[in-house]
Image (cartoon, rainbow, N blue to C red):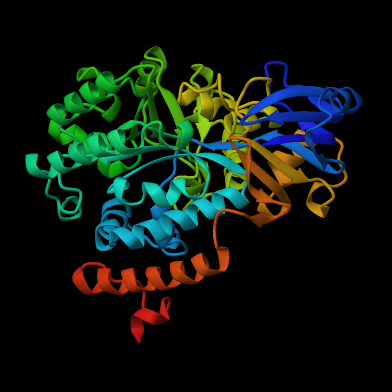
Length: 464
């Protein structure tokens, strides 16, 4: 569309990190055409639709560098329970779902992302071709991938780590299908990556297949890394190495790779990953819900690693990621002198915008408000109690903003939410269906898996 937003506060996140007061931004088609003084742009774009921006802040849309939208089906459960959750709950629930049920939960995640000011989701998971269309229909910009593994993730919770070539072949076939069907789809709004699930469930042969696919299609790659003590122990038992050094042995590390978590990386791991130019998708919120975050974020930052923010699972709220990320990063675990007020808010906002775009090799297109870039834009209502008074706007945004202050969201020059109304989703219908789907899936999962037993009384629909 052709739109001129006038009289706004524009938080560019550009190279100079400019914040422009009483300014305007012109959008022509799917691109930012101009940013500058309101009077000048009103003169230069006389036929563009006008949108009054007084009281609004215009930001680059958030880039969620690592999430699993389907796992909204676990919200409010495993965050509060003891024990291993990746293979005990996350794998079983995803295999319990039908294609339609996955699509419903993925759409719910996309809806929350829109209401949280996000314009780009990076979502590696399983059975992705079955619900990619539901995600694309919400209007978001997407980087999708099938999280490949050739060690059966349904059996790991029982201690079985045998390589299953047929199991792995299914992932590779779905990866190829995803790339052929969706890479570049929706006028380039949907892209693909190639993903290894994690070092503990990928053999050297699987890692080689993944690298070959990425090279053949010229795609970036992603992988979970050192996300749990169980992963670290399994890789040590199988290969005598840490997860990072196992990936290094197989030639898997490189500047086209983004690894999520790094929670149990050693200092030697961090030094290696930094040398190889690997990006970090940091997910501070889920890793902090059960106690202080264990990641050595101080050494990671000191090593100059590009750190982007993600939400991982059970939420798509990037404001929460920034708030908790600020706390985790300021603690600076692993530094000789911990604590302080570093990083400053702009650096954390960069993690949610510019740095996320850089992990995708897409900073030339998204991640900041610059002329010629894609019109992926989030508008915040500054006339909200949580954001007033305004003395330092970026500090207010990072420390105090929440989804309720998001006014409008635009992707590729088209509104997906305008004046707080989501335009691409039947919101009431989706919320009702997601509730019904989640309850049905949980009933089937608990009935089919004797070892999965949620605390009685907490989920009444299971006790009926």
